[in-house]
Image 1 (cartoon, rainbow, N blue to C red):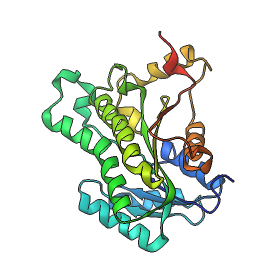
Image 2 (tube, rainbow, N blue to C red):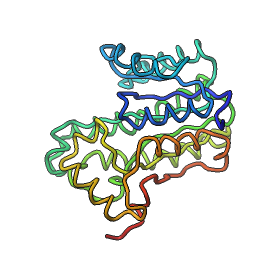
Image 3 (tube, helix red, strand yellow):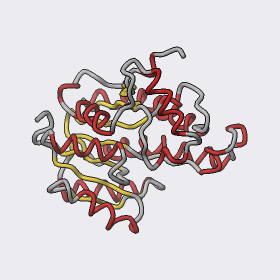
Length: 256
């Protein structure tokens, strides 16, 4: 029970196929109290039905569009639950046309939107959680990235740029928050059939290539990635910060 007596916040839960749900289940199975945020009040009933599988969990509607909305959400969570020990940032979005069209045709608005939601929101959440003293000593902040941040993957387009910005943010945040004992890392998961993945052109072919080329000759599951996140939440990873850790069956090491 590596997360016994810890409280973790999973930000961006959508459905049972998401990496965030895999992380939540692993955290609970390892002893944590699990809290959630979701986007859009219209999604409350669906989310609350999902998290009912995790006893004691609570979901909060949380927009990341403005710093004020983030602060209001985090202050409410702190008031009702006290300080927390870990946050998973599982929030990303890009306009459909910016994923379907060639990257060179990305609009200025689309570029700004993808980077604001997918990268800056993590910076804002980290800063505000620190400012309102929401984090316990030794807290762990984790975000989700993907191999398309460093390699060109057809259909990933502007999201690859946003994830590259996110990964660089991890390093700078780790440096800023390290003196307070707060760790910041990212998990780069292999491709998984999530709702977000449906927006990537020919996503099924990516799964096939990974299964054929990855050293372990298989795709990863939400459980496997969730377990890696639980490890980063735990004190067992107390010397790890500023890292992009791949959970992709080793695919990232291959040259072809």
